Image 1 (cartoon, rainbow, N blue to C red):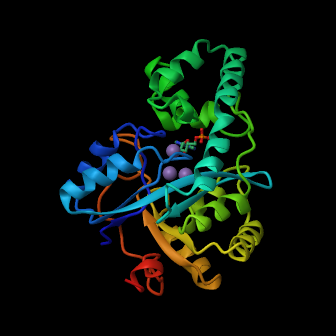
Image 2: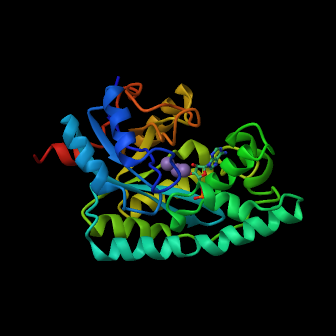
Length: 285
Ligand code: AMP
Ligand code: MN
Ligand code: MN
Ligand code: MN
């Protein structure tokens, strides 16, 4: 088992635990090296780093940046970023800035579908209003009895083709990788299997084109082991990592107790042949 968890969320984005609670949970469950990777926001890092120090845990500054690439939304995780690098914080501020207007549009669409009060309801669940997200809408729709769980809300209302989905322009792939690299970090393509699933997912040809572009832009790693991948997908993306000479990353993508594919804690080993992303920083210590 791997005792690295390099992808998780606090309530600074769409997780339900505070950074301290998240770190405590990781420590209890055997994580030795942790990266906090909130969506588009760095505000949880100081608190998480302090909490990790209490446990003697190695803490890595991370972020998960929302990107629009062709018709797809991608997530690029940055590891070992410097949160004080101004172009990164300015870039993330610009990525976040569209969220309020998008939330208003989502609420309007849901109202047309007969569900009112969702804007206020979603903000009620968002600790950081700048990071209002689909997950907060989903939590409100569960709490108000419209769906049984967050997953069903997404399937019925919040994904492309459903009544509450509003398309949005995030950062470009080049911007996200540029901000990560400029701040000294390593760029990881998060949960690639998710982009290939569903009616509007990309096919293998498009995945290859994406990986080609990611590598050309200097992207270093592919998330091979993540909470939303099956063991077959670990193997599939280990092969892509090898083909494209990418390092392999791993993370739970934990958002909160009872809500995630996988809890924090140790993760299944990489398939044979993977070079772990930590080679990028442990070789020169
Ligand atoms: P947003 O950045 O507002 O578009 O929200 C994206 C977040 O929604 C992701 O980071 C996940 O936490 C969550 N999410 C996306 N798709 C699903 C899904 N099918 N089921 C559950 N959560 C999802
Ligand atoms: Mn999320
Ligand atoms: Mn993601
Ligand atoms: Mn995530």
